[in-house]
Structures are given as C-alpha cells and as structure tokens.
Length: 205
Ligand SMILES: C[S@@+](CC[C@H](N)C(=O)[O-])C[C@H]1O[C@@H](n2cnc3c(N)ncnc32)[C@H](O)[C@@H]1O
Image (tube, rainbow, N blue to C red):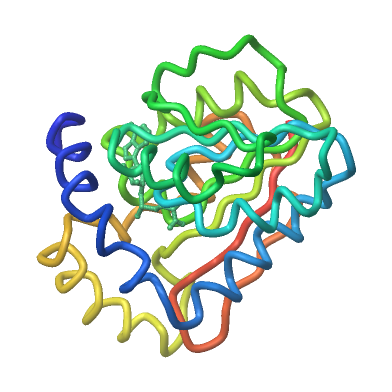
C-alpha cells in the first residue's frame, strides 16, 4: 500500500481506533514498554504511534525530565495524541515518515514500535531508519503479530492471515524479527504471548 493511502486509512480510523484496540493488547503493550527498561530522564521514540494509548505509561517511566517523541504518518492520529496529552509536556507528537526520520544518528536510547511494523509500507527501510537513530547499546522493543515458528498456532495463523489482509492490509506474514536483524539489530529476547500470534522482541545496536 502506498504511503498516502496508509495515512488516509489511519486518518479515517483515528476516531474509532481506541474503541477497537482493546482486549489483550493492553497487556502486551505494557510488556513492550517494560521490556525497554526505561530510566528516568531518558528520551524515547515511538514509531507509528497511532493514538498513543501507551504513551502515558512511558511518560510515567521517564518522569518529568524525560522526553517522548511519537511519530506517525497520519495527521489525524498525531492530532489525537496531542489532544490526549495536552497537559504532559514531555510527550511530543510529530507527523512524519518512519522511512525518513528527521532525527540525527544515534540519538535515542530507547525506541518502541507497537503493532506498527505490519502497517509500514516498507518495513525494512523503516527498521533501518530506527536502527540509524538508536544509540549504540540502546534498546528497541518490537511488538507485533507475526507467523509463529511452528506448532498448533500455525493453523490459527493460516485462518487469521487472509482475514487481516481483507480487514486492513495488515501484513502479519512479515517476519519482524528476521527483518530487524537484516536492518542491523541484535536480538536480545523474544516473548510470545500465549493464545495469540503476538510477539515482543527486544533488540540492541
Ligand atoms: C496499527 S497502527 C498501530 C498504532 C499504535 N502503535 C498502537 O500500538 O496502537 C499503525 C500506525 O502506523 C502508522 N504508519 C504507517 N506507515 C507509517 C510510516 N511510513 N511512517 C510513520 N507512521 C506510519 C499508521 O498511520 C498507524 O497509526
């Protein structure tokens, strides 16, 4: 899907996104933030932030001296984040393309991507950009849906995949862990969530 189409799709979804974004995802997102082991005062980048539902949690972790930069290609998603966190000055929501981040090399000690990689038009270029702006020794937490390595979840995957494609062109066939490694990241840990096709992988640079 072309970028403009993706932005328009999420613009349309921005008003309803949080209503459908429920269930186990809250727990999984919390895990992906905890996996970053955020320290007070740190600067955290969230790529493909959407409505930014978990940014409050990140803000609690970094404290008032920290900074969150939340980037999304959909202007309306960015507008939701800005409105949502009007009083939390450490959250800066910016319209931008993850394939062409405006930040300098090695800037962020922590980067987060939750359920975003499967929506990015070019996942490898996006991950290469995330790698570029991650500080050496920093942590990247990647939470998403993907093909299970083996076992009974394979069947679930075969059923869910065409439905997801029909519902919104979400590419759950993408192997995010392999792509992140290809982009240069070193894998530290993978947690797979029971009963779902969701994984959270943490990487370093
Ligand atoms: C499925 S939503 C996930 C949002 C949020 N991270 C969450 O966990 O709910 C994917 C988001 O990625 C954004 N996105 C897609 N392509 C992008 C790109 N090239 N650059 C920045 N954001 C992008 C979409 O606009 C959308 O808000």
